[in-house]
Image 1 (cartoon, helix red, strand yellow):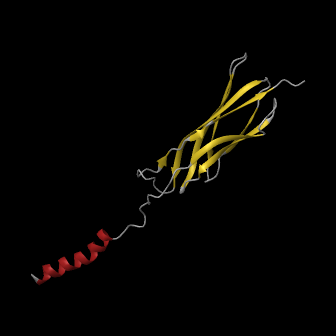
Image 2 (image 1 turned 135 degrees about the vertical axis):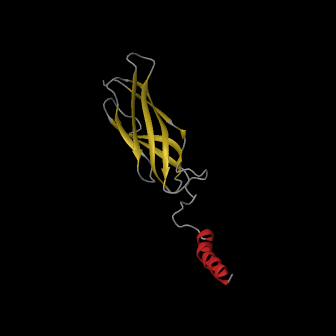
Length: 149
């Protein structure tokens, strides 16, 4: 009987810390996805053939995320020929994503629309997932180019 009690006590001394301690390898749930307010282009009034930098501006940077995918479309409607140029990219840090494109050689009104894709976190988002999403409040910008005179 003493032997069984001794074995049980030894087992409890070993097993209890395993059940009641916090495992340091468990990811925390503290990631917050970013939110974006608008897409800004530089220069703000590009000309035909200009290289333009588009930046997705933060409303809130969030925290503990490290990778975001995004897609963009440059469109020109209403006149022939119509354009629909697409692209995409990945931001690998907590920073405002930016990319470049070249304005086509045809004058007209263009709309640049940007949408975010999957966001990956280094910890867990509140729903317990390592993946999240974000939105852009004003996800498009319009500009007009004119034929050179």
